[in-house]
Image (cartoon, rainbow, N blue to C red; front, side):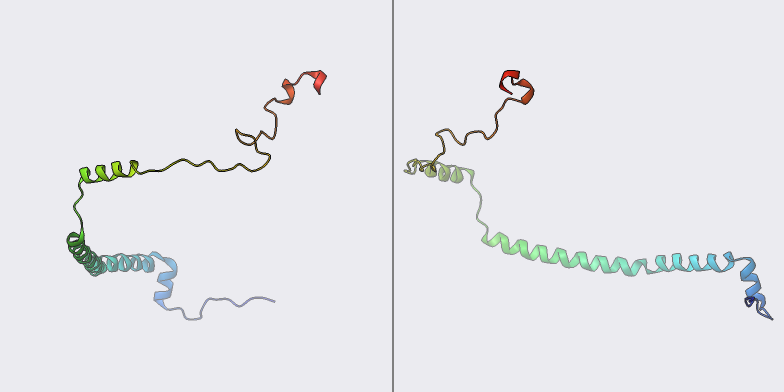
Amino acid sequence: MPTFHSNPINPSPLQNTLRRYPALFGIPLVLIIVGASFGLQPFTQTRYDLQAQKVKQLSQEEALRLDKSKKKFDIREEYYKLNAMTEQDWEQKRIARPKDVPEWGVPPTRPDVFPDQVPDSKR
């Protein structure tokens, strides 16, 4: 069963031209897209400028609030605080070890000697 042909009976001259030269359709389309991106650039720049301005305003307001409640840092005062902490009375207390644990920690679970280092008589 033959398929139907897609050729129209009376093609328009525009269809013939676009079929022969597809760049006549593609090049103007690409130019419009690129031109539109350059045309919209001021609007997008304005959007980002407004966003940056909002962020700057918030940070300045926060800085003003922080300056009022901020205590000045003095290295000598911190030094004396640390010295006072070391002079506090404290004593070291030993905690009881669990049963079956030797004085110096847990015994090794495997020997440190590799099988090729063991003499043949002990294998």
